[in-house]
Image (cartoon, rainbow, N blue to C red; front, side):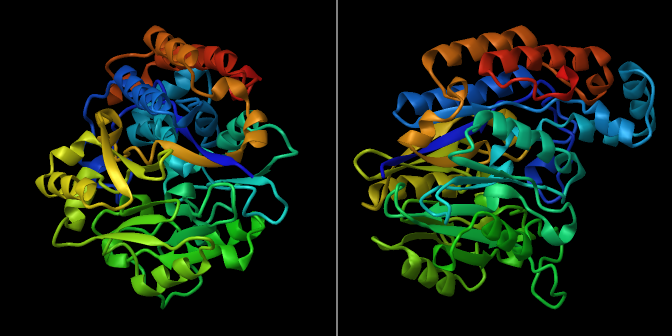
Length: 445
């Protein structure tokens, strides 16, 4: 059955700021307390979405979350009016205020894991919201993420939605940032690739020393069961612990896959040859094309600085592929040189497109972080909420919406401003009407 891959990018929220909340994410820590520009951040994301849609790729948008999250603060003992809660938490714990104000849901690669109907035993598209329990500011996302997903993919005949796994470290789940899919064609059964950082129930198993391994194999195995994926369509791989300790906090910072192509750094996985062999063996109808980037060409540190692998690998109509990377890739000499050689190599990747995503990049999120890949048949696509699919009209409308509601400068001190909360609620209330999501936010209830 004919199917296409759609990329659903997260709209950057009105409280986009640099609070350095993500330990293990080098960019997040390096830019802590910098002044952010939420308006430009949202527009940078929108420009990427529209440019890809103009190139013929199918593109959608996902709504941001309500921030600051006053409800969470109330569960932690803060009371009184919204204004009083913000004033008190700002006085007592500015870090906590920053956490509940984070716009991190913009990185929808962490929103969920998605399995297409061609892979699942019940023939439905399965979504499991990620619990993101490694970081407090992200662990508060999954319930609203599930609501937005259900409003975006509402038809139960085609879509199966699962709540997040238990929010404990043993089942730490970071969503599609540690998951990809290989196939001969989007519409046929493929191989789903789950990358984990540690085994939670085996203390003797290898794990990183410096930074936390956010994804456990136990979480990946649970998602496989929920999505009804047969063994012959699943491959697990451990991310190399020493690579996590260099700042590679998700697999999508060190590898990216699409179709029958895996673009990866030689330091990405433990037992690489075994993993590649299993992927090739289980990939029916085609052979795996593994494109290895060696340390001699690009070091892991340069890969992290440039976010070379936090890229989108997209199939073009002629069967070749395009790599979408951030402009930082041209600023790192080894990466710029490698990409020039890659395009001329005669392999599957023959085009590189660069986008300015600096507002997101300074918080540690590149093109791959900003999008959730969803493979849909034409019938399934027709069942998606049509108002979230990118079009000329939606692009214009969303830019107007951003211009109307977003600030162009935001500091840590601004997060305590109750007017920012009101501005965000007004903006999101209007957005739910634009995207026809219904009342997904608590303040609308």
